[in-house]
Amino acid sequence: MRSLIDILDLSPSELDELMDTAVEIERHPEKFRAACAGKKIATLFFEPSTRTRMSFEAAMFELGGNVLSMSEASSSTAKGESVADTAKVISCYADIIAIRHPKEGAALVAAKNARVPVINAGDGGHCHPTQTLADLLTIRREKGRFEFLTVGLCGDLKYGRTVHSLIGALSRFEGIRFVLISPGELSLPEYVKTEVIEKNGLSFSEVSSLEEALPELDLLYMTRIQRERFEDPEEYERLKDSYILTPEKLSLAREDCCVLHPLPRVNEISVAVDDDPRACYFKQVQNGKLMRMALILKLLKEAEKPESEASRGEFLLEGKRCRNPRCILQTEQELPALLKKTAGGVCRCVWCESAIE
Ligand code: CP
Image 1 (cartoon, helix red, strand yellow):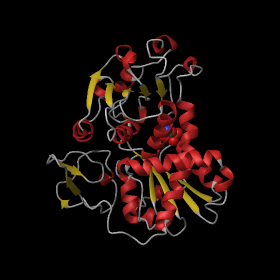
Image 2 (cartoon, rainbow, N blue to C red; image 1 turned 180 degrees about the horizontal axis):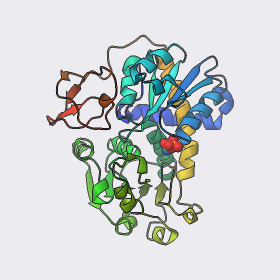
Image 3 (tube, rainbow, N blue to C red; image 1 turned 90 degrees about the vertical axis):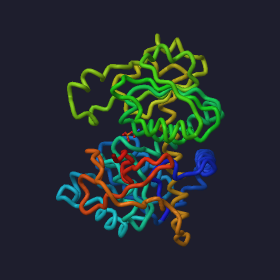
Image 4 (tube, rainbow, N blue to C red; image 1 turned 60 degrees about the vertical axis):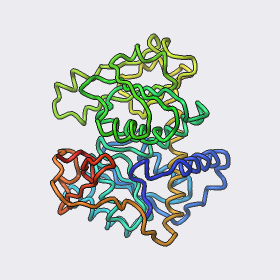
C-alpha cells in the first residue's frame, strides 16, 4: 500500500505532478467537488495542530469526501492502545489515514499495520512531508525554479521536522546551497548533513548570525524554537529568543528574497513583517491545502491498484535497541528493534533514523 512517510517516498516527477494537480484544483475546483465522494479520511492527531489537521479535513470536504477525527484524549490511546493496533482498527473505518504523533517513527509503524494509505502529518522531531509539499508549491510559485537557490534555514534545526523534510526534498535539485542558521545547541543533525546534503554533492555553511546570512539568501525559512521538544525548560528559556526577524533586519535581504515559515510562529517573525511582499508564510497555508488535496487524490487512486512488492524493503537487520528517548520503539508494544545500514555503512534505527552505536 502506497503511503507518504518521508518526502523521499515521492520522486521529483511525482512532486511535479502533485504541484500541477494542486494548481489545476485551484483553477477549476468544480472539477474536483465529487472526486472523493463516498471516501473517508481519518485524522489521528496525538499532538496539537491547527493547519495540518484542518487543511486535511478541509481538503477532504472540498473533494466531496468525509472526515473521521480522533485525538489522544478522546481515544483508546489514553488507555494504552498501541499505534499498530490503532492503525489496524482505523483501517476498518476509513479509506486513508493522516497521523501526527510525538514519537519519531510512529507514522511508519501505522503504515506497516494499516490496510489503507497512511500520511505522516508529523512524527516528533523527525519528518513532516506534507508541510514540505506546501513549501515546494510556494517556492515554485514565488521563485519559478528549485535549482541554484541559496536557502537559509533559521532557528530550531535540530528538532525542526519541517526543516529535515524540506532539505530532503531540495537536495535533489542542482546547485542548491544551504545556509544553516542556528545556535550550536540546535544545529542540524549530522545524518542530515552527511547522508542528505553531502551525499547529493551539495554544500552548506553553518552560521549563528541571521544578519550575516540574510544578504545572500534567495529563501529564508524561519522556524519556531519548539518548547515541547526540550527536556530542560531552562535551556528553552535561554534559546527561545535566539532569532527575531524584524523589518529592520529584513532590510538586509534581497528585494526578491522569499520569507517562509511553516507556522505557528511565536515571536520569531515580527507581525510588522507580514505586510512586506517578501512574506510568503500565509501563502504556504493556502498552498498546503491544495497540495494535500492533490496527495489524497493520488494515494486513493494508487490504493485501487494491485499491491506491488516494492516499498521500504530496506528493513533488513534486527539488533541493538535504539536509545533515542523520542523513538516510537520506546513506547510501542512488541515493536522489533529493526536497523538499516546506510550507503556509508552507518547502522540506523528503521523507525526514527537515529544512529545505533
Ligand atoms: N505547520 C504545521 O504543521 O502547523 P500545525 O502544527 O498547526 O499543523
